Length: 195
Image 1: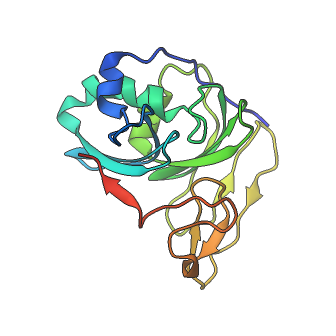
Image 2: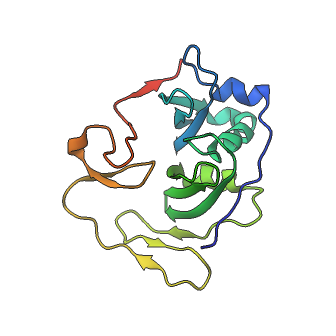
Image 3: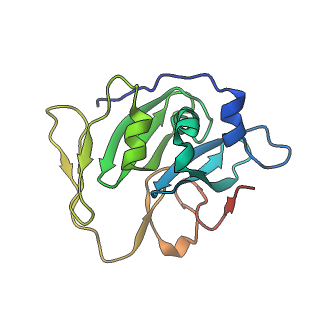
């Protein structure tokens, strides 16, 4: 499999001003797992690897040049142990990319959902990018791994409403009410707005 390794960058006080976990008595920082964008703002859904709380916060597109380097430093980290030694395995999507990563320290896999324009900016400066599948919503998804590899095609979505766990990519039904039965990841219902 053709994996890409981001270059580690030192975290500064300026970076921590944006991504430090707001929970009292927590010394961790927030690792984004979903990034949405509209013309005015970027909404970041993140988790603290230390206290495991989840937060969402918004950044103004007017200040993009100020926060983009910080976003790059924290996005390309493991959401479980916060280590930077990750491999970006693949990216699938069109308007939103589902990016699969693998941590070389804790050996866990995770998935991040990133809006396509932000994804391109986050990948800037990385020598080789993973091949991406540019599929439109409603089309079958094709996953690309290595050049020349036979793509695996996912069939049409089933009628039953399924959610995909952002941590382990397990497809789960809505009956689990905000947690993944495979890895225990809690989402949606327990996301707080960061103060």
